[in-house]
Image (tube, rainbow, N blue to C red; front, side, top):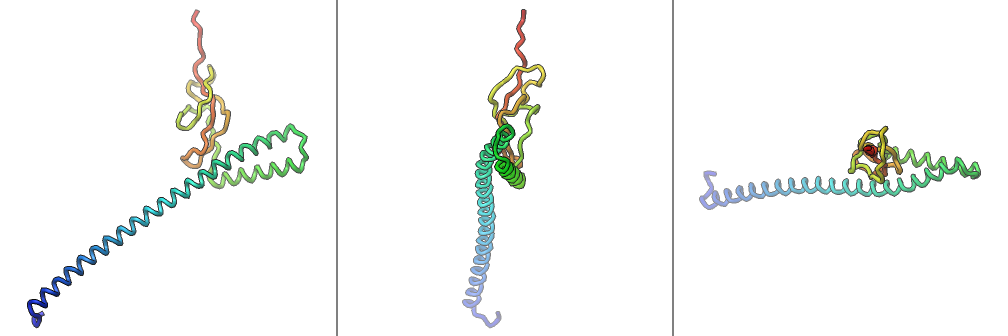
Length: 164
């Protein structure tokens, strides 16, 4: 730099400063882009999960209808081939739901939770603990921590005692 004039040295310093600023801005823009990519991936994943849950809720309704049909076959005089076909479809749908992580909720005898269960009726009971699920009217289903369909239940309460 000995042979550089004052004006050339100033110009070089300005270029270095501009270069440094542009590199910082580029680094910031790349970091911002990486953050946006992560946010978008999370949103896509959340949307896919919501779509899967909607579909599984609809499938559960069909599954329960098919379950009722299969149970009614035990007392009906349906042709054996039809009964076998419906039972096969029912088993296959059971396997599909299980492979997606859908589980039937086992709630009888468990403490009633208004966030997880839908109380349809309260029943007097001396045999079942207070505020526990005494009977399931309609099964509930969950996938992991997410409840897809809450069970409809009867909840125990203490028997009313008359004082005499």
